[in-house]
Image 1: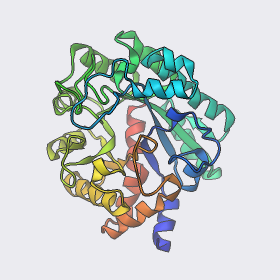
Image 2: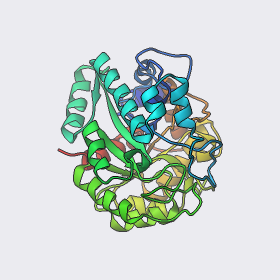
Image 3: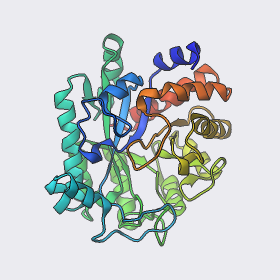
Image 4: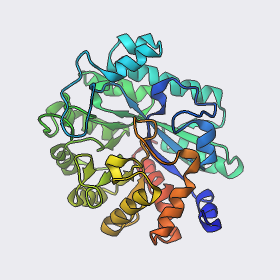
Length: 347
């Protein structure tokens, strides 16, 4: 890495829109040789805000093309059973949401420099605090798949009370709310999904389009009145598959004022090297402008990557190598995500 890249990286706000690190029960206050993310490595990588995604259900043998709902063969339920987290093991997706929210609460309680971001005021306070305390860092809680709410419309208000501020309506299978890009029917929003989306905008929960079917993305873009997010993914222009976004959808997300978080793993960018990630970022910047592209690692999400969160400056170097100017790199690293979060969070 060049001195220019290192200085640019560590003088920029850095936001990662998606990591699944709460899943595994590791002590994230301690630096680990396992996984991709923990608080010491986040600080070493200069991260300002980490969005922690909550996955609550996934089918055994899941893939990016075609999955039935998991039934009894639920890999995340098995994980909770194996880590002796019995509430999450036996209680279904809402219980696994509770368990991971509690893990984030424990992290915040144990690390006084970690702030749970629930409001736009929290976000503004974090940015001010970091000027005098560089170790201050924000954490935001998101959900992968509205099945975590159950099928009760009141589940969304309950999740909001838990601290959830980002929500993807579907994950690896179709559910009662929306079709998944990896499901069987791959339909659009259901009536419940539409009502839930409207309530999300009222409450101040950002809509995450990652994993949604093309039809569901179309439905969201037709009714969105606030910026939307793709927390982690890629673009078909550099990596065409079911996990990535078409040019049409990139343009539609940009029209809402939203951002697309580019991931670091093979199915997102057709490679794992920093240059593969930067190539996808450059494609999206060229298509929709540097105001609508962000980072979405999918760290600890069952992915294989070539750098962990402590090594994020290699990605800054790769963006410079792609010819992006410093101002664009700063926007992609974090300024765009902070702008969208400020616009979607409640006051």
